Length: 211
Length: 405
Image 1 (cartoon, chains in turn purple, orange):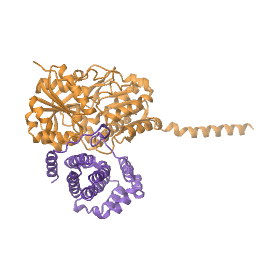
Image 2 (cartoon, one colour; image 1 turned 120 degrees about the vertical axis):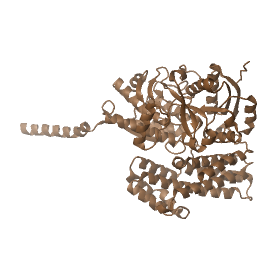
Image 3 (cartoon, chains in turn brown, green; image 1 turned 135 degrees about the horizontal axis):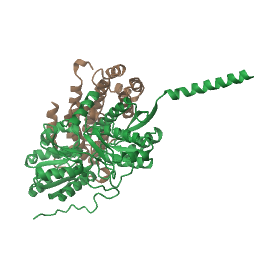
Image 4 (cartoon, chains in turn cyan, green; image 1 turned 45 degrees about the vertical axis):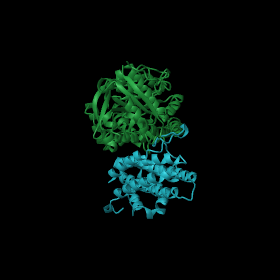
């Protein structure tokens, strides 16, 4: 399923042959070398992640219980797979690092998916100017990458085709967002990103796990 | 009075013994720093670097550590950016007092960290970054590398291409620092060995459609297409070359920075037959690599990747400390020079005195079914090139095409 998405991404990438976007050195970067500034949620995630990697699950649990990540998870519970937070809490309690990683991956993938959907909606708004839509797209892409980049490696380990598909779509959308001439094209890669992430979330959340 | 004096003396001795006891009973500790990309797209390198270091430290500590000191690892995330890399390197050196710093992943960040390790006289091993300037213009006496840089890779690859793939080569590169560096190193090596560059073209970074360049490539009619791209540009380029039938028409080659290893399987079909050079692959039947990979897999449950060179970096450093009988950076740096080890993850390796680059055999791999399979071995002595410390490695370079009769 995800493999087919990847193939479609590849074809889409070729068909999007029109926009030849060149960048100045100041904005030059490859996807992967660019890392957006942390916010309180991503900072909390890194604290938890590094504590888990060090085998300090008690510290990770405390950081989760008292940090903004859990609060954000609760605030967005309706858009997340059922029981995601409770399952993460339980995994931290029993010291199950792999399960902690899986659930955090799902959470940030869902965060990125929701942002991609909203970005696709707002950048297609005909009442806004092209410049405004390009600027909105750029801001959303920054936010999407801030969350997705955190879990790309976990995604790649499970299914590298998904990881490649997201990076290509992000890269394509970033090019369009930098050009006020191309905001109309933003919708396609953003929608593709949301679709691929939805499949990832679905396939990583088997019903039998009750999560 | 005498009794009181005696009691006071005894009590004082007892207190001194009590105070001193914990210090005596606790093992001495030496810290080493592990700096790299621990979150994000390049986590695949930063994480494996950590595992390589961890494995070496466990082996060393099981044998009593180094100079009687138990080794402790402190890991830091450099966020794949020069500024945080510098900040974390300073933290590791000044606050944690690390005697060895291993890292980092991105070449830009590595070069920034080199300024810190030079300033604070700290032994610095690089096992991942491959820019050409680290052992030339940026070199300092505390810096060592067991990652073949772009010059080594270009030398090795050029020799193989001329011998086995074809002499007429078209160089297509991404037109910014990384692509220019790989392209010019390869052009220099190829022309020196008698190959013919039939065309060069640079595509701006972030090009979405590469097809405007395909006509020029086809007109030049090369036997081999050398590609110097990275990241998503590589993914997009390969996809487009494939859809235009050019992956079947030409033999394709590039250095290892072309593609993240974890991406290979997802782009297996366009990459089929692609030749690239590197020093390690979990699929290489070489007995040293297999033995190392088996231990790595047993310890961590996954195959090792190129970042596992960090394992050897720690062993080299520990051997140098033992040889120097000191943690003094000047003495340890000198003890490194010329050192050879037979039991590294890829067999015998020696550190060249002049530029601290490890002379290491490399292997050419061809992508088959999404895996890097070995097709040839290049002797380290054939690819390392002359030492160029302090010299501009691209001085006098020109992209001009030299037509052959």
